[in-house]
Amino acid sequence: MTRGSVRVDSWTWAVRLYKTRSQATAACRAGHVRVNGERAKPATTVKVGDEVVVRGGERERIVEVVKLLVKRVGATVAADAVIDRSPPPPPRELRVAVAQRDRGAGRPTKRERRDIDRLRGRL
Image (cartoon, rainbow, N blue to C red; front, side, top):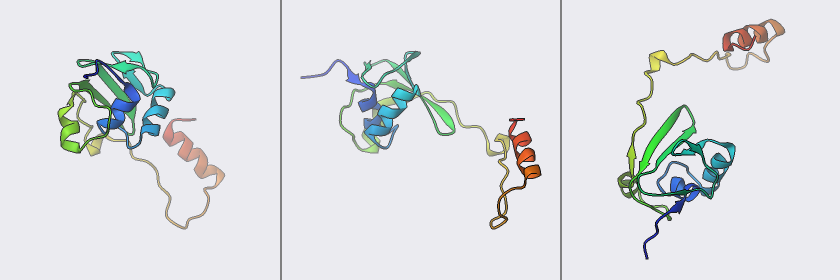
């Protein structure tokens, strides 16, 4: 028996976009997964040819469903089940530098906190 569709949380876990099934389910509930441009609930089904967009970490992953998988498989089989259309990550030079304090410097003062907030664009 061949399936015509699979749950999106199960499929994203099976093709190794998430480490655990519960992480995939939580990402769907939080709105980090889209199927064909629509926000996906965990039970949303995917079919061959669907576009799945996964937000998380530093970048967005855009993949097309080539093969339906229910169980987690090896990395080579998982790579054959998707077509990765994600844009390449930005070069390290273009990433925003995060302010870091020296180890053991203690808590920031009020002035330093204001500087940090200004740097992060919160002020």
